[in-house]
Each structure stands twice: as structure tokens, then as C-alpha cells.
Image 1 (cartoon, rainbow, N blue to C red):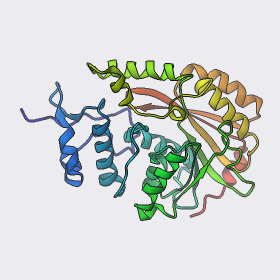
Image 2 (image 1 turned 180 degrees about the vertical axis):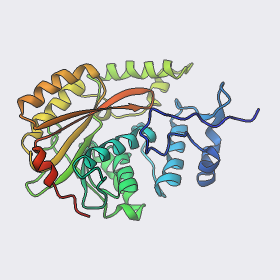
Image 3 (image 1 turned 135 degrees about the vertical axis):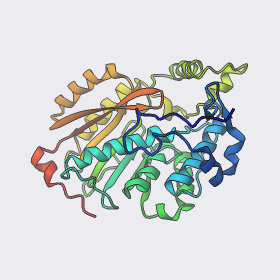
Image 4 (image 1 turned 45 degrees about the vertical axis):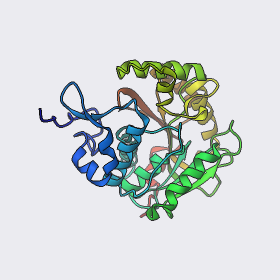
Amino acid sequence: MKPRPTVEKNNLHPRNKHRLGYNFEELIAVYPELQNFVMINEHSIETVDFSNPKAVKALNKALLIACYDIKYWDIPENYLCPPIPGRVDYIHYIADLLASNNNEIIPQGKNVQVLDIGVGANCIYPILGNAVYDWSFVGTDIDEMALLNCEKIIRNNPQLLDAISLQQQPKSRFIFKNIITAEDRFALTICNPPFHNSAEEARKNALRKITNLKLNSKQPDKAILNFGGQNAELWCEGGELSFITQMINESANYPMQCLWFTTLVSKKENLSTLYKILNKVNSAEVKTIDMSQGQKISRILAWTFHSKAQQKNWKFGR
């Protein structure tokens, strides 16, 4: 039986080029190793085994080559391997956010500067944001090995050399402190925060993912590792609520250096507390943008300390 094309993912952003699924013939043409992982599922649809880290990495490499002009991309073993459709959705939604301050025109070009908190070893948000909108990025992380891997990715993709800079956060308890200076003017900050309270909670979440993927593994611990992620990527004391609370409180120290502060929020029940904290620090405007991250429903929390008039007067440049 001839395999059916992948079904439309209508929960993705309208500009997301992955809404129509994956054209595996084209992807294999640019990255032949992907052929080793393509299979036909029970619905006669071409796909890959998303519980297999090698399959996910191969799919990512093919997508980055075919869709985003990336010639080299790799990550160390056991680091997060991000789903590209969900990651680029974040980029598209925050582009719409910037357009709301720019006569509904998405600002593009190197003068649109974005700060990525927790860039990780994959460097995925700067790669995608630069490829789609030509933005420039500062990527920060507490993990030196992650930043070294980002450096390797940047070196091997010349178009990224002047577009992405990296900075290590020397103090794990801080987010913007030691990073943002008085001279900085970021249009956006972005963050995919550690969601879990502990390693055990992260492990239980991985088990749920395995169940959702109908993975019948005889080596469950190995299967859990397949989802990847270092401790700082997956969990921190107090989980995402604690992390984002710290982010909000610190953001109040840099009110004019950034137009919009944003972060993903995994747990909807955390929003009411976060709104109260944003009110306490006297944010001028707060927006919540619903989005899907693969099988997971998530949302972007965005806040600014700029009045409507100040937002309108922000100069993006070219």
C-alpha cells in the first residue's frame, strides 16, 4: 500500500511551513541518513519513531537543511533534541507580537535583537529566528558545554557568525542580571524554562510521554533518556513557577532595555499567580498567547513596562 502524506497540523501557526507535515522524499534528498528512520505507521502515514533520539535528530538535521539553510547541526548525547515545528511556532507568534507595535508589519533584519534565556546546546531559537526573520540573537546559558556546542554550530554556518552571540550566565540563581547592560535594547526576550520541580518529576513526565507514544520498551530507563535533557534544561527547585517568578522580578530592573519579555508557560494553573506578580512589579501590559507544542498545549506569557505610546515609538530599524 502506498503511504499517505502526513496530515495537516492545523494547530500550528498559519505561517508555520510544517503545517502540511513532512515531505520525506525531499527531506531524504537533502539528508539521506534520514531514510534509515522513516517508517509507515498503522494509519499508512510516513513518519519516524519519535521515541528514538537518533530518528528525531536525523529529522531535525533534514528539516534544518531543507527549510532553514543550515549546513551543520548536532547536539551532544542526552541534551534536548527540540521539535522544530513547535519551536518555530514560538518565533512566529512573537513576530506577531512585535508587529502589533509596528503597524501590523513584522519587523525584520539584524537590528531586531532578541535575548534567548537558556539557549541550550541546540541553539534552535536563534537559528530559526535568524532564518525566518533575519533577527540577531544573544543566547545565554549556565552550561558551558551547551555554549561550546552552540559555538560549533555557529562556526559551521557562516550566516550565523554575525547574527548570534553567546554569553554564559555565571550565577545560576540569576536570569537577566550579569547579562543585560544599560546600553542594551532588546526587542524581545524568549525562554523555554525548566518545567519540573525535581529530577523525579521530570522522570515521571517522561514515562507519560512514553505512554502517549505507545512505546513498549523493555528498557524503560533507556527510553526515558531518549527524550534528552540535562538537569538545568528539565528542572529547577520550585519548577517553572519559581523560575518565571524570578524572571519577572528581575525584568523590573531592566524596564526600558527590552520592549517585550516573554516565556513559555507549560502549566496553565501557574498563570494566575504570575499575573499577580506582574501586577506587583507594575508591568504596563500583559498578554497571554495560546499555542501548541506538538502534542502539548502551551502558552506564551508576554509583558512590557512600556506604555502604549512608548511601544509605538520603539524604533526597530533595519
